[in-house]
Amino acid sequence: MTDKFSFENISPFQILIISDSETDEKPLTEIFGKRDDIFHFVQFPSEAENLSPQRLKTILEKADTADIIFLCPGSVENALRISESLFAPGTVFPLFIPLFSLSGIKNSGDKDKLKNLLRYANTIIITEEPSHYGKAEIMKCVTSPLVNPGLISPGFNDIRSQLNEGMISLFSHSMGSGPNALKTAAEKVISGFPLIKKYYHSALKITIHLSVPQYLGIVAVSEISDILYGKTNDNCEMLFGFDYRNDEQNIADIYLIASGFNTNILFN
Image (cartoon, rainbow, N blue to C red):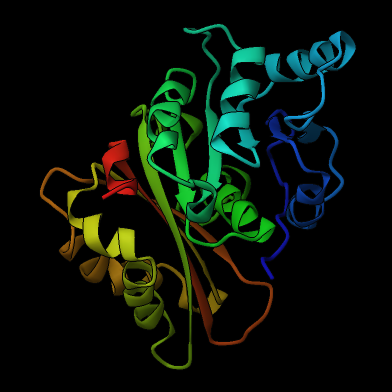
């Protein structure tokens, strides 16, 4: 289970999650809490339902004030339908990010739909984990540098720059324990998702969030930098976010988003 965020010093920040499944709300609420001044969840009708003018108005009002919009659709087709309903091509929002599990991308027919979806999205993030908690973990990696001030606290412009390629991103999460917890987690976060293992070296940008015991401090970054940097290319830009676990167990979590891929990697 992912630790719940603490929302210190970020009251102006707005996160909007649009989903076509009400079951997405529970894991998201467990992470973000009942903070209506920051976190907003709206349910979009499924493929078989019509979008009422009032529901569309509500979603657009919330989208207009959001800093990050996450879209959690049940299919690529519905993601495109939602995006076309909400945003005219060229509409600019700070960050608009659809999330998918790899199993939700069903066949080569989705390839063109993903390309069309990238007309609206800053990036599309793909995870191997099909559960609703997989989507929640992606959101933690994207927003934690902003909502959990720690030893390293990049700003919103840094996050936007990392995820503004109009291309595919890949997400992986790993955990290590024991005396070599961080090293174990760093090795697993690359090798655990076959697509990341295969294409990590060609990523244009990598966003990493560390969740570690407080006693590790800044050592956490230097301890794993050789592993994570050593497998990238010379032009790759890497951004770290950081927060402390609430317990003193020797457990480390690493959340990683590798960005800058075209849609072909999903169908090779």
